[in-house]
Amino acid sequence: MTLLIMTAAAVTVTVLWYRSLGKGALDLSALCYMYWGASLMWMVDAVFEYAELGAEYFRPEAGDMLNDAFLGAAAVVFGLVIWMVILLVKDPAGRFRGMEEPEDKK
Image (tube, rainbow, N blue to C red; front, side):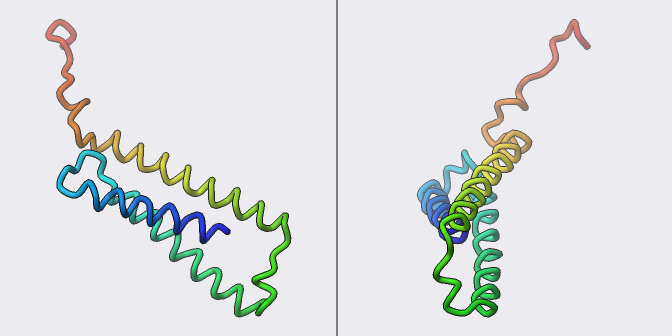
């Protein structure tokens, strides 16, 4: 479930990034890298878990699926928070760079 949620987020952000190429206002590439990296991580985890459990891997219990869904949603939200911090630090629109201290405060 975590793998599916993260891969869906990665595909969605990749499509948004591709549609906004050249505009550069949101710098979605960092978010793409985060989500695709997490998807790859959970893909490797799924392969090793399948190697361990075999066909039983495809019959998870409801509690396990709920935990995985919560983890996937939390990872998507955490990625968005990190991306917002990156945006604030980089300030691609130049909203904060133009703000200078008034003369009387210097």
